[in-house]
Amino acid sequence: MNDERFLKDWLRDTSESVSDPQAAADKVVARLHETPQRRQWLPRPPIRRGQPHETITRRTRLMLNPIQAVLAGALTLAASGVMLVVMTFNVTTTVAPSAETSGAGELTSFEGYIGYEPATQPATREVMDNGVTAMREQIWTIHDAETSDPRFGGTIINTWNWDEYQGGGGFSVWTGGWSIENDEGGWRERPQYTFAFPDETYPVITTTFDGVGEYEGLTAIVEITEEVDRFHLRGVITDGPLPPIPTRLRENATD
Amino acid sequence: MDERLVRRAQEGDQEAFRSLVLASHARLLRVAQGVLRDPHVAEDAVQQALLDIWRDIRRLRDASKFEGWSYKLVLRVCYAEAKRMPRWVPESLIPAAAEPRVGDVFGVVVDRDQLSRGFQHLSTDHRAVIVLRYLMDLSPEQVAEALDIPRKTVYSRLGRAMDALRSALEAESRNPTAMPVRPEAAL
Image 1 (cartoon, each protein chain N blue to C red):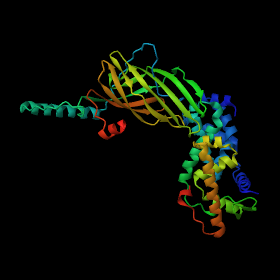
Image 2: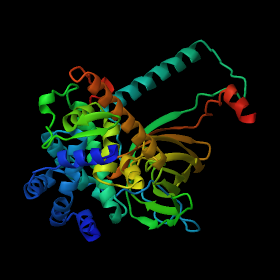
Image 3: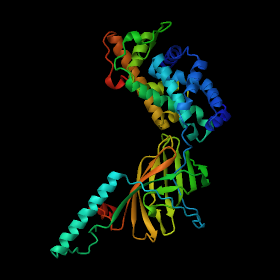
Image 4: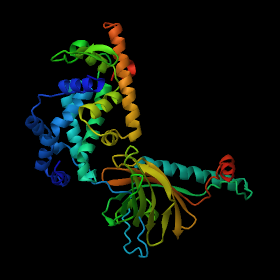
């Protein structure tokens, strides 16, 4: 008897159970009411090509809590005080224009949600020679964006390309991005690569959007967290230049 | 596995899910019992895994993959249970072999009680790969899917698990009364 056979026999003989499946099923079913089913996972997405962004919805909800409001008020007062001092003493400050300088532009924080909607264009799906399932050009249109800053609301369209690695632990790698449109302008997410866990959930992602239309020159940096049936957003919108990329990284990039 | 049952359960049909439980329970319990080596803890783990399956079943894209996916979920619970189990498992709690046999295997002469004690010294990773491959007779591809690891890793992990078991049995044969449980293997 070899090792494998001996081990198999031992495992089989010691892993049998006398449990009653009917009783076990009863116990499980009795607890289903306290275990809500999670919604079918839908990839985070957008852009319906060649089609105008038709419906513009702007359900804005102020989500600043009282503490944030107090802090905002205090900051405003502090800023006013500084201005008063500057005016009183006739002090002027000059910042020499420089590509290296990060100017202090106006920055506004916001919070909100984007709900799930059914896909408007299913992805093409192909299993590659290496076993990877390649899904391409999935498109989502979402009309359910609520944020505390009306600029970051409207119709959201998401598009993505997705590679599912069955043999790689079940993780997936994908890229894509959101496009947001409203009456004044919109936002375009800078595409980046990220991944999804084997159970098709997402890590928390921080991503960057560039403003278009009336929002040209603005940048939104947004943290996106997947929840049970929607995405939670927290972010800032700034009109100032962003901090420059550190010199060392820029040098490495040109090597 | 009847894929129609899976799809009905995805639509919230509790009767269909009950049928799935009946069809899957014994299989999942064998895995949990094989890994955890404690029938009571294994039973609880399977109960929890079945509730997890109900919670997440809508996220299973391909109904034909239900079986492999369910292994993944029960193992996830087993890993969590294993972390909570005491580091030292008294020998009295180790299931006694129903019919002790002696075999010249693993390079040493062992009986089933020795094998039970040796298995207690394996890490959860090693137990899981052995159970899926040798108890459940899954293919390396299926083991890879259930463990979320590349197929190549299945082979290497299985090899390391068997080496670890041999080492434990050799130590046991040299000194049957004093074989400490390695902390990282103590579940």
